Image 1 (cartoon, rainbow, N blue to C red):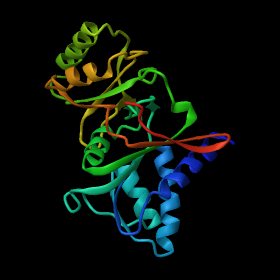
Image 2: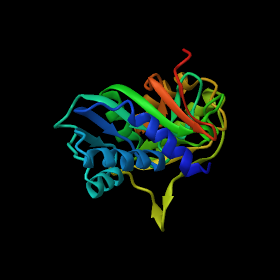
Image 3: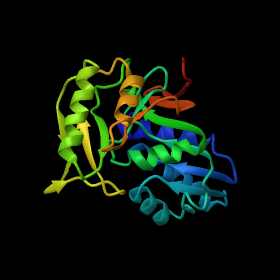
Image 4: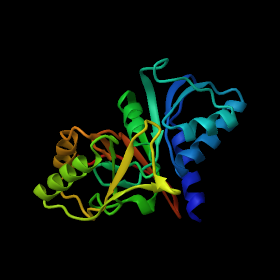
Length: 232
């Protein structure tokens, strides 16, 4: 089973949790896109859902495949969000934002009754941090914000490169008009402390630590998909 087949397995298992008539948050990334494709097949057969996309990229795919969409203002409370992750630990702590949609992903997840994460087993980790942590920052005061992030990391015993994400010939810009700094910490022993301190930096718009948000993770491997619940 190759990587895409595993993503499809996870997406199919997540689709079983989606009920007719649900208000659904729809995530961003390659695994979430496999979910959209499967969902679209059910919608074509008469299955009713209303989706809120977490990125313009996801919105375009949903429109192309015929998945009905609403804005979050039209559906401010959602039943369920299904999204991917770049890392998942045993407590279902996540690093997200590799696709650059972390702010909208977190807003949508926070408005949902439940969040289900779908991923292949390569995303399972003992401790978060091997995947560079995306930190969405305001363009104004970028250098000052970067220095504040470095000082925060140092206080917590973290080190590693802070790289401004690039796209083509320039800086990557999120759907919200912000930049992303990718922090290569390698290992984050106290994700809660880092989350709290990053949130206190005015220039930080949001970060990719999704803690105590996922109710369930569906992890696919060569033997198929399995469900993991938080051990906290």
